[in-house]
Each structure stands twice: as C-alpha cells, then as structure tokens.
Image 1: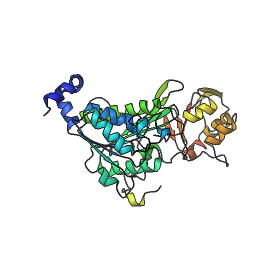
Image 2: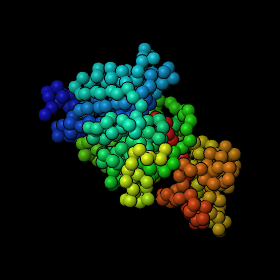
Image 3: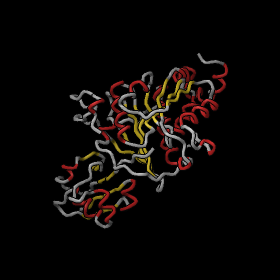
Image 4: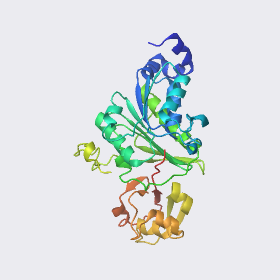
Length: 251
Length: 92
C-alpha cells in the first residue's frame, strides 16, 4: 500500500503506471554496481522514482577528477568514500526508500551475497571483467542485467533477460583493451538514463524492453541507432550446454 | 558493384563513416574493411593486429547480422552490402 505522502510524491508517474505500477516499484530491490559516472545518475533517478530498496556497491574514494560526471559527489566530498557520499545525497532526495551502500570491490567471492535480494542488476561498472561477473550472476540468479558503457561522447546500452535474450557474452565475447577512457559527464548521464528507463519499464511491466538490441549513441554526431544482437547457442555463459561456474570464469 | 562501410565510436573518429566503396568480385569483407582502414594507420591498427587479423574485441556486422571473424575473412562482399565495424566501449 502506498502512503498519502507517496501518493502525492509519485502523483505524476502514477498517471503513467497506476498505483499498481507504483507499488511494484516500491516492492522492488535493485542492485547498482558502481557509484561512478553511470551509477550516480542511475541511482538518483531510481531513487526519485521510488524503487523500494536500492543497494549500491563501490570501493572508491571521491577524487577531484570524478566530479565532471559523478554527480552525486560534490566538491566537499573529495577524499570521502563514494558509498557514504551517495548514501547521504540519496537519502536526502527521498527518505521514503531504503538505500543500502556497501564499500567493497565486487568480485566472485561476494557477488552472490551483494545481489541476494535483488530483482535486477544495473551495470554501472567501468571494466569488462566485472561486467562479465555481473552477467554470469544475473544468468545464475535469473534476474535481468541492465548494461551500459561509455567512452568520450559514445555509449551503448542493452537489457539482458536470462533464458530469453542474448547475454553480455553473446554480444561481446571479448573485452576491449583497458585504458583511461576520456569522458564528459553528459554521456554517462544519457546512457544511464536509458538503463534507468529500462529498470522502471521492467519493474512496472510497461513498454518494450531494449532486449536483443544494442543501443548505440554517438554524441559527436548526435546520432542514435541500434544493432540487432542474437543469443549465441555456443555462448560459454548462457549457451544451452554450458553450466555457469563463477569460480572457473575465464577473465 | 558497391558496398557501404560504417564505422562506429572510436573507429568512426579515426576513419569516418558511411563510406561507399566500389568492390571487385571476389573481395572478402576483411579485404574491403582493411583496404579502407589502411588510409589511416591508427585506424587500421585499432581494428587489425600486427598479422592483419581482426582484433578479438572488434564486432563485424553484415546487413545487420553479426559475422564471425573467420567468416569475414572468407565471405565475399555482395552488391549493396552494408558492413558495420564496431568496438565495444568499456567506461562507466
């Protein structure tokens, strides 16, 4: 049941999703992997949308060079843990939901515990090895993975529904090389909003999800397109003959 | 006959995009992409390794369908083909 306060707060989106839809958001739990460029805008918008419980894991300390894009962290937060900074802002934005932060590096030893009650995993990471781990976890737990990644003014996003759609390994069998990537804050802002929109649609059951399609944004050309992607029957993660084994995961 | 080659993201910055290319019969997808990419060494090196093979992470699409690297080296370009070359991005 929604309180009077919640009915007022979410009035304008209840026009879209109904009180039933809003209750679905309230009863949902979402895990956001990372409180960086993608994680900050995603967390803010899922917080204001009234997702009942949001868990965020990140191990980093706020650095001055983060501030051009990681919009939950302010100048005064430099040197502070990103999780503490995020928790403070998100709780102030919407005290009616539960924010849980975990100051840790996501790895194979803790990922199942971190995502224990989650109805979906948001990929807000900055590297492919951890993304592959999140993908395997999502497949194993049969919960969706909302993928996004950026570089410069370019970005990509897709939604993965285990058992139904192409997984991250089907789409990207091999990771791109590691680098210190250039970025301006608007790009993770835009891609993060595609991911957050997908979360809200998935939880409320509205619309057509970004599944088996890779959304590609070129901010330099102001050009958006999508490429069709397919499940790979021989995929080492979701292929029909392969069991998922996180410990033996090929990095 | 002609085909169109489209580069995405970083490849686009280095090589441009929507490049119409005249194609001789018998040209493979890899030949076509390599021929265009050779115009810019940095662009070529971003897509191909020192042996002239596609780098592992590079995604090659033909008319909206993913093509394995080994197949891209064998498959001949057909008139009107649209070839897309895409590097995943990894930042967050």
